[in-house]
Image (cartoon, rainbow, N blue to C red):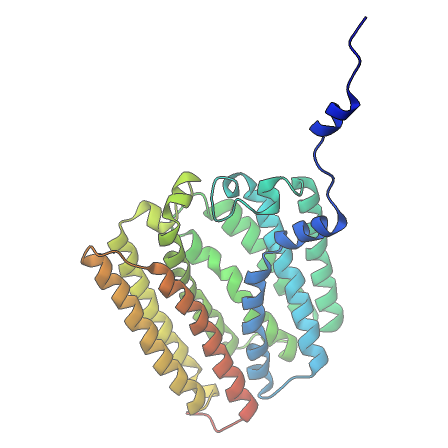
Length: 312
């Protein structure tokens, strides 16, 4: 006669049931909400510069909602593709797909649904161009950066970062229905800002990326080589910001010069410390880069709202 089964013991081996709130938190975690906040910060100033003033509140809200869904879609799909390496890195090990809180299938459906919703929403509330640009940004981030570049080349974040530049173009197109040169200049600002921003973070988490076999630049290059490139991109970025002078006043230009000079100085300090063999704090430059970009686009917004004569 077989021994009786202990229902109490069997129940103890079952995984704990997840409540509705835990499930919602897991799906929100897929969207990487903190990164979305920064994307939205640059969208509104781009819209204001396109309008040469303040667009309608409805248009701003509609564009932000569509942009949020598009960014959330890209991030959720990224979590699906990167679940294996996210689980190996301390910085990303708590992401829902890495922890098994959301299955890859469910995350994929969630990401694709958000992509479709964002495109339809932007088409109905702004215009077709903005909807197409949002889909292009999602496709580029997932297919080009995540699947093609990230695990194959140290230039991954240089070219893959182009997806993060798209919110300013989408914001501009939502207002004008076109993509004009100031939108491309703002695209370039974020494009040249991304490498020093992300390489500073990657210097801090070099061991994480090495463990996951992701060839971020600090993994495959010496600290001195990384800091030299950070300085180079910082200079190019600051010079590039001045290309907006023809459509802005002294308010923006003054901020771009002062803040840009400070950013370049801090990049040089990082390089000097690395060259001297001292212990450096790359996260200081990382956090500064966030403040710099937010401040720069705030200056664009203030400039557009006040409407002073342009410098040129």
